[in-house]
Image (cartoon, rainbow, N blue to C red):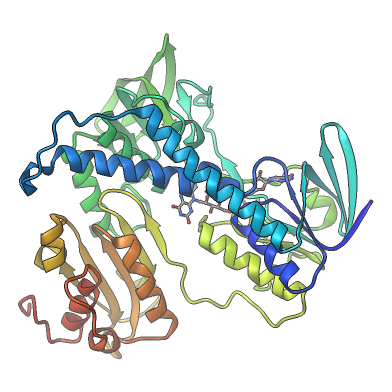
Length: 465
Ligand code: FAD
């Protein structure tokens, strides 16, 4: 039997960061992982998808580079090599996580954990059971994809994001069920790799809840590349026909059927809490089963914490790791709490989307008197030089005080630009503050300054409306 101060269940971005911080704070820490260190993000999510997305962008750029005076002959894509590159990136990061854990004196136990009571965890590995007695338990077990009845994953024709990252060729026809962030990232990526893409989304816009103006830019680009997008639509049945499938879709235009080589189902994720015995322990969950905690990440049971995706949306790696740090610090007795103002979000579509704070609609719903201003990338020197003129920066602010409430960006480099906005929101910046901040020229983030100058009523590079 192992004894420790903290046992962290799950070695994803929430869990491993929590374990490192806990050990740094002098707590004897054990991390239990049933699959791979690094969790979903490193092994099956953020990192492999962005590796492939980067290559798909390069491929498209290379093929469309004549306008820059660049002529490549025989540009071709070696899928196997691309997959090897992705695997090497993932491998390096996973090894890095393991050495960080070891270097920080975290004990790693590979096996499936279950909660016995508020201080005991049982770990099964190779049919052997081991018990850990811990003063504190952190649940960081993440989520798993939801499967709709009748469209269950079969590993070959109906697939989830994990399989979509492992394909050995681009499907001829790819039908994506669910137009959320993951579905759209795959849609853009596989379009560039040669697939004909169809997206079926239940709600009345792609990326439900996102700023409609922003979403429109990405949808337009998808359609320009040939995608078919069906909104307010649902897949009613899937019939497999050899290696292809016939999909029946109910849409506002009526029922129709579509053939696909692969169906990627990406309709949301549910918490992974099997074996956690939450009910019998008295750990509260919400209606969808996500674990409820206070701002210290403590659940309704003393000394039992939860961090990351298992606590619910937004399901983001950077949120998970911040929560891991908070939990570790609270366990160590530090006055830590989740007191951040914003959690920036990025979606690696083409063009990219990034957002921090409130959209104009959400700000109005929250009771603010709202103004918003847009600055288009088509008016930005750096964007023109890079041939990336689609999209805009939109600044949402209080009409009375100029306080920045949120910023949405759609365009190239959006993901790299949003951190500046997150800092501005954390510091309670006004549009005046953002306009006064000198930005280096020529760069994409200048668009944030330009939009803020417009918001402050003195635009330089666009005409006053
Ligand atoms: P996870 O990473 O899911 O880790 C949970 C770990 O717990 C897993 O390793 C699992 O094996 C382990 N576990 C579960 N049950 C047990 C048990 N009983 N015993 C022992 N171990 C157990 N987020 C971003 O911020 N940016 C992105 O670009 C992004 N892209 C994504 C792309 C895809 C395709 C997907 C699927 C997700 C993406 N995400 C992205 C989301 C991101 O992966 C998650 O937010 C993040 O992984 C959450 O970390 P976590 O530690 O909470 O959970």
